[in-house]
Image (cartoon, rainbow, N blue to C red):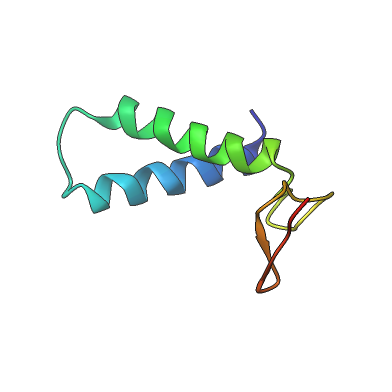
Length: 69
């Protein structure tokens, strides 16, 4: 895992932990959820170091308008 991706996953996992009210013993669950969310964005071509790449999936909102097939 790249340093940038690990930082992104760590920040997202922390945000999930905060949203759930700082529960103890769920760090792995939060980490895996964050990885899944980040992975979906990367697979969809939505982000690459925070920048849009490639064509978005059909139905994704881009620049305030919805793309369709």
